[in-house]
Structures are given as C-alpha cells and as structure tokens.
Image (cartoon, rainbow, N blue to C red):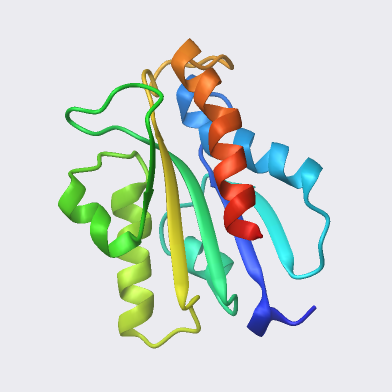
Length: 153
C-alpha cells in the first residue's frame, strides 16, 4: 500500500459509553461499505500522543468523534479542520488530547497528513456506561456515514 497517497479513517470513542461510541459505530459501517486500496479504517480510544502514531505517513485523515458544544443540539453533525475546533468551544472528551497531539506533531515535523478533517456528532450522554446511543444520535449516525463516504469519493 502506498501510504503517501492513502487515507486513514479513525472512529474515535469508547463503545461502552453510549454516545461516546459514535466514532467507532460510524467507522464500522464505513468499513462494511468501503473496500478500496488506499483507505484504512480503524477504531480507537487513544487520543493522546499514541494518536500521532496512527496518523503518521497518511496523506489524509478523517476523524469521527462525539462532540459536546455549549449550545449544540444533540444529533447535530459538524465538519471541521483541527485548527478551527479550539475556537468552536468543543468539549469532546478527546478533542483537547488529540488536538494537542496534532499540534505537537506538526511542531516536531512528524509525517502527519496534509489534510485532516474531523466529523463530530453532538452527543447527549457520554459518561454513563451502556451500549445505546440517544435517539437523536442514532438518527445522525447514518447521515454522518453518508457524509464521510462522500468525502472518500
């Protein structure tokens, strides 16, 4: 596989915490539908410095995660570049860690993707154990899948 011209899709989150499972759920659906060389799809809950190892040597990365904004409506879907998230007051349980990791990686001139796109779905409850998402998030998951699939085409 030619990593210099490849795309990484990361479903970020924890399958054991309701709406925090958004990223892995979207990634699983995409993995079932996309079977093209040059596209790698993974799930992870790593969001710190280990996250840099996942991104290294890819041309493009698409990250899907649960978001919690101050005034967002549960189930809303956001598309953003990492550098715009800090100004959007996102309080994703992962955003600070992976945003800091990306910034650090760039400052160290690591081989990070030229293009990083983040899809976030506004989450309801991300702290309670359980494997069910809120109904609004359940409805948003297939919409987010379609948006990511368009991004891959």
